[in-house]
Length: 143
Image 1 (cartoon, rainbow, N blue to C red):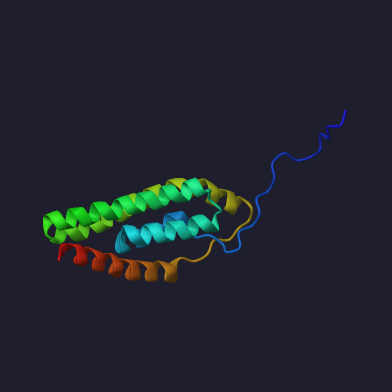
Image 2 (image 1 turned 135 degrees about the horizontal axis):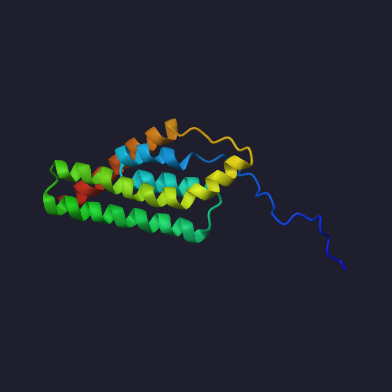
């Protein structure tokens, strides 16, 4: 018999090059920065967590769909206060997809004694930068 009973069957995943952010923390830039901020941070964090290409594509598709829905909504309502609220709602919807896909890999990272990175400054920059980019996109479509 050549089977070794003492060989481990569950292997420890390799540590990421950069520590990931907490997927729960992406909710704040998603709310204040909209779906573009949630998509960008979700994709960057997905790369840090070594998500599969399929999961990264799901995050990208959710982000593109939310941005397109927001542009259409703002264009049809004329850009009133509901248009600004739609950015927060669309961002939160993208965050739900990001959180659902990243929760398990992040828990595995924590169980391997990983220490998550801080999302404070990347989150602030994403909320401001992506929020402005999204506003410029919407402004360009409305005019």
